Each structure stands twice: as structure tokens, then as C-alpha cells.
Image 1: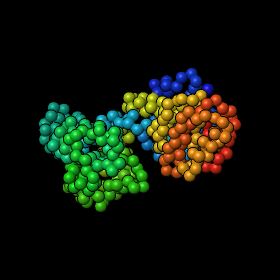
Image 2: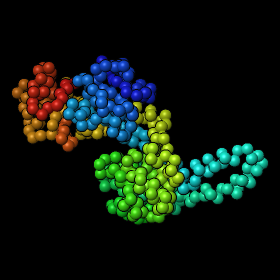
Image 3: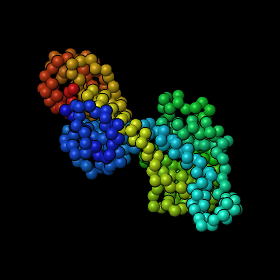
Image 4: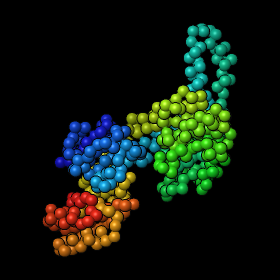
Length: 386
């Protein structure tokens, strides 16, 4: 039996992927795996039994990645599972950044009580809420991952001229990107050319304050900026100054902070990007399947701290070793197996930064002894024999 701890309310359809070999719930102790959404785990002490954490969503800033790596805990996320939900809200953001729908609705509420005069008052006052159409305008998409590509393609279908920037563009994303999109190798071209700019990059030290007074100065006058990734990608003080000067016409964000609330020109959405039942089901399902495949087969797909590595089962036992990415580790591991006169049916080794992962399919063996011998190798973090 395996144990899965849930740290948030997780979609039942996602948890239904765990069969009767699993006990799942928020009261589970000494878990083999965990699923989390937004719960902060930085101060959580993980049991020695914990093999993996799956984040039902893309962002993993609520998980102590470095500590997990040092403890041999694989951290998964679910890229793309909520992409359509976020894409739809971004497209809504494009419209409300242009057509002052939100402020117009709020103004219309103030007309309550004027009876038959309301229609005349609407016609007289509506000019204050006019805004441009998006068709024919230029949209810059910064970050062409799953969400960015879907936004680019949808905007293209709406008649926008799309410019995309991503120095780490994957082959998969490149194939999925509509051929009408213009791929830009210099982000400054996005700033100079685009009427609308939408940001779809992770928050890192290098992307923090990506939009600031210097980058805003390079943008077109009246640019409209959308941020559905993370609050700190946009410098709040600089965006407010740009709105006040008229350099920026509107800023739409799905990550409200105290300093951007109730600011004219800023539309703050309460983090609704992935808040759809379909998205929650998709994320939970993907997270559950990632945990199952790792716990039962040792395969790693969509990890943020260890290499992606999958291998068909071919031997009676599978040896899974998480270790430091240092010289001679593979030689030492295979040497122990050879010394024990065990045949290796298949082997795969990959690394990611300071850490590496080795999978070996072997014949019948004294698994307890083998596990103990491999654990004794300096640099080995965790050994499992499935």
C-alpha cells in the first residue's frame, strides 16, 4: 500500500486515478507522495518516507525546491494542464484593457433610481468609456510556453498581429505556434512595436521587475500591459507612474497587491486564471499520474528539480538512484551490481544541475543488501528498488 497526503482540497476526479493500492487524504502520515495546490510548504517538515511532491499547477514557489532536492524528493508540476483556462482569461484581459467595460459597468450602477431617464443618461455618458478594437493591433507575447503559445494563437484568430519572444523556445512550442506569428529574438522589438504586451514567464531573479521604468520607456505610447504570471514581474511603482503620465494606457494583472488596488488604469483580477473546474480537474489528474508513474515505475516526467527520464520496464527489479552529479557515480553504482553478480537488463542516467538520476533494470537480487550497498556510496541521496 502507498500513502498520498493532500495539502489542499484536490479535485475528486483527479484523486480517482489512485486505485486501491493507495490511501489518500489530508490526515495521512508517513506519506510516500503528496499533492499540493497553493499551500505553503517551506516550513513543513517532510517525513523520511516522502518520495515526491506534485504541484497541481505550474508554479512551485510554495515548495522548498532546494531542500527537496537535498532530501531526494522529486518535485513535479503540471505544465499546460491549466493553460486553456489562463488563455481564456488573458483574452478577456485584452478586451477589458481596451474597452473600458469594467469602469463602464460600475458607472452604470450609479444611474440606478433615475427611471426613464437612464437610457438618455447612458447615451450621454457612454463616450467616457470608449476604447479601441484589438483587431489589427500588434500583440507582443513574452514567453512562449504552453500558455503563451495558446494566447498567441487565439489572438491571431482574433485578427491581431502577434509577435513572440522566448529565448528558450522548445521544439514543441515552436510546432504549436501559429505560422503567422512573428518570432522575435530581441525583446526590445516587442517593446518598440507592440500596442499590447502580455507576459508569460516564470518569476526568477532574472525576470523580477521585467517591466520597469527603463523597459516601459522603450514601449509605444499608450501601450496596454497584461500580467497573468506573477506580480513581481512588473514593478508596481513604475507602472503606476507610467499610467499617471499616460505612457501606459492600462495594466491588467491577475495578481493583486495592496499597492495596485484601486488605482485608475489598473484592472486587478483576484487570481482567477486557473480557477475553473476543468483546470482543477486537469491539474489534479496530471499530478496524480505523475506520482503514480514515479512511485510504481521510477519514471520522472515534468519535474522541476530532477531530470526528465523514462524507461520501459525490462527486468524483475528496478533500481532508482538519486545522487549528486559528480564524476564516477555511474561506475560506482554499476560496479556494486557487477560485484554482486547481477545482470543489468537496461540502464538510463541523466543529470540536471547538481543532481542526477540513474535507473537500472536488473535480474533477481537480494534487494535489501543491494540497496544498502548503493546507499553507502558517497554522493548517493536516495535509493529505491521497485
